[in-house]
Image (cartoon, rainbow, N blue to C red; front, side, top):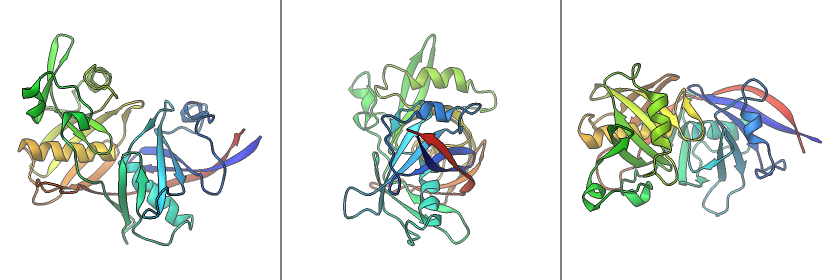
Length: 285
């Protein structure tokens, strides 16, 4: 039995167990990630973040993301900010701008002087095969908004890949939205072969929204960085948000600022805070 060092961090309440996999051995296939994620009997977290050496010469690091149920996912925006702060604070790099490989593509976090972190989240993808989303016909594949049949209900969602798949709904009041019922149903809907993260977005103004996100493999979280990006992109694409200045996304855990201009190959930029909670060790075979 050995001791595995970890750091507990969060971005707006979206919390993480962060592990340095460069300077200590870690095997994700045998690690009891789901047990560690339990809040009453384990460390407690939404995702586990694993730092590894890069696989290409152009990157500084590689990082992997595991949900609370142990499933590996492609991307995590709040995790990306925590990752950048972790490697800098731990002396793994002295760069304030870091090139990072993820399963969802390369991202570039930048540590700001005010303590926040800005992340280039890449180009949003809309094509059904890029989500992935099984459109019902060619006309459906060409639309920005898609209709899903959920039991006796039909709901409109905008599907976007921000390194991981998202379905965004516009609602009148997120406090009254059936986030858990519809979130679970949409996450596992047959038209999303790899499941999907579900965002419930309330429009306050062309530059302000409220958002709740039901994450696949986790449930509702306090914040979701890629979800905030997807919601802002969805709102701009639908014409209910403007793109000439950042959109302020209010999540249960706090505020993120998202910038995206509606033009081909434009990147999405996310800025938000990061907090280290504590350092710890856990028994590990």
